[in-house]
Image (tube, rainbow, N blue to C red):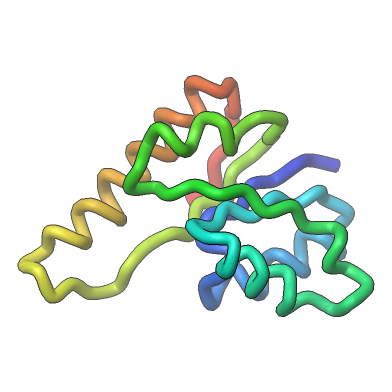
Amino acid sequence: MSTILVTGASGFVGRHLVPALLAAGHTVVALVRTPTAGEMVVGALPAGRRKDVETRIGDVTRPATLVPVMAGIDAVVHLVAIPRDFKGGADLRLVNTEGTRAVVAGMKEAGVRRLIH
């Protein structure tokens, strides 16, 4: 099976995808912005599965944090996105557009060839 990095693992879709990937036999790495977010991702899993998810700290709006996160990853499921913005589109562009661009660039630099977006 593959080692899969899930961006947005603490979000609605991510909280459902992580257990499904584990059940399918994959190794899961969750990209989180803070240790607290990592605790939330792991804490949402059944007690017997909590040790099966590794969390790594990074932020799609800080591209330099992404290459180290990609080490040993076979594929990325990119779920980070915001649905609305109260700053005239600036946050949408930063997170949704530039964040995705940063994930792809980090993948290229780390040699990760598979992306689900």
